[in-house]
Length: 339
Image (cartoon, rainbow, N blue to C red; front, top):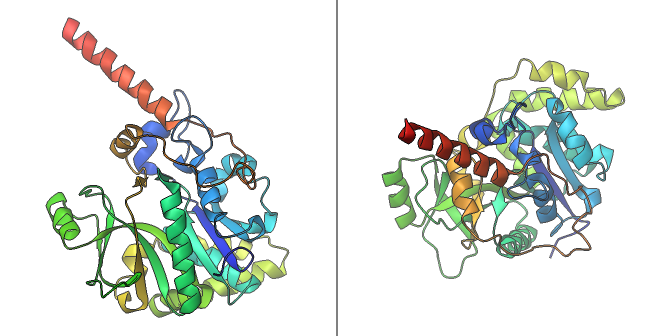
């Protein structure tokens, strides 16, 4: 199995988390991107994502893409990570460019490498289930490096705010299924019908080779790939000042990886089914509330590796914020009844 020093891990941590701002805004303060918050009191969601990567990669081969404007939050949490492994986006231009920029950096350093890509702001109750599926995906990638693998979680309900992957019917004991269709945020009824047909929640967790993943971008947005590649190289030649990338980002459109890059390229993608594991993207206050009603879950990493790449302290507890909002709502309701 190809793990450890032969695999890179990439954490996507540059998002703003706009949909969750009602919970991530402390009283009298500014909103904190959810990846720098914890679900319950304890390590941040970013910290948890880094631990997931450590199941298959070393800290020296773990990269995080972050936003320049979030520097005050990510600096203390990534202080143990090599500086060259922190890739700073000058602006948020969506998940497509959020993947492309670090991918180009990694191609310069290790052009034929395999990598796993994970969002920084998700929660997984049964981490061991996901870790096993990540290892399975890398085993499959080692056997067929040309394929790109997505992890799809067995749904625990028809959620209209999630993306779905509809695989083709399973043949024998296939571990990686061909993709028939991607569906983004279908209405509840349609989501239920998709689940009945075997659809999986799209976790946006990817296992691929760098050349294989680059092909998706080169087919869809070749001009942007060329421009960004040139900008990355110009900045590298000037001691990493990132001026060329910043100038390019100022004129690039916002693009979504699932919506703008993947559709039409299903033939090159396989999906690995992950058992129901309490996965959530914590994208809305309602989803956070549902997640908080579940047990805390298992531990995926040993205590000896827990603090390898990030500190424990988070900036805000979503559970505490949820409790505060619930208490305030109860007080308002009580006052209305008394009045």
